[in-house]
Length: 298
Ligand code: HMG
Ligand code: MG
Image 1: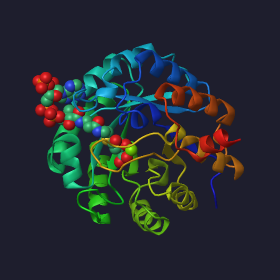
Image 2: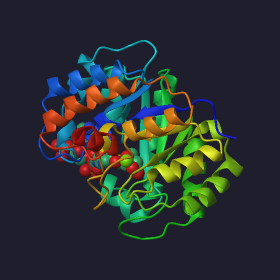
Image 3: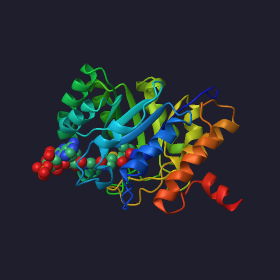
């Protein structure tokens, strides 16, 4: 009972770049996003409207959002932590607002400087105003499968944050394995409980491949009917406020697997690789995805 098609949500320009120490020039980010727009992807998370002191790499969010060439059939999304960020996102007419918080009290505080309950108060007007401005709103939960500070996270903690975010009005929930510790059995357990509460169309999975389990976790999720996956081209990425949170699931590896399984994504692998080679050159270091490693060894 595998799905016929899957939506791949490219988070490379945001999750991929946010952890990179070396600043990527704004024009290079714009060129890269424009290349990604030509690959057949239907969703690209392009930047974050967060405090640039916290995430210096994305200090050029406004410029990037203003300058990219937008295609009509692509949703361009950005991370927004508060009303200040929303204001900026609305000024540049971002298509989708992504709010974010953690299932772990400690990670939430390290990442956004608030307790979980304070975060709901901050996000309530953000979600309301984004919706009334006609934007779609996605919510992320981090550390769903484990926290770098607290270790195990209970399914109840995840369900509680999910309930709150949906009741505040988010339309889609992305469950994040921030530090790449999830295993397929655990994903099945957590997702089964989540899907008892919420329709599968509203759930996306966001795996990091830190320990090589991301594609196995995708397969379990596919079998449970999930059709939305976040990934980052070349496996770039991580959360700067979660030590060891290297490498998102690579879009090129995800696409390879889905394509070989006959699951439609609309993506052109060759164009994906061209875009990966472009950012690899700008970063000046090899991208970690298996697809890119194989490419280099041929
Ligand atoms: P704070 O310091 O508590 O904020 O940070 P504040 O409201 O007290 O304001 C302090 C200063 O920040 C002020 O400036 C504000 O103007 C400024 P000052 O007076 O000191 O010059 N400020 C802002 N500037 C620009 N844009 C804004 C903004 N808001 C306040 N939106 C805050 C709170 C949330 C802003 C901060 O903690 C922050 O920016 N955090 C960002 C963390 C982040 O981006 N983390 C990575 C993304 S999450 C992730 O990667 C996980 C995910 O991929 C899923 C997964 O894998 O699990 C999504
Ligand atoms: Mg992430």
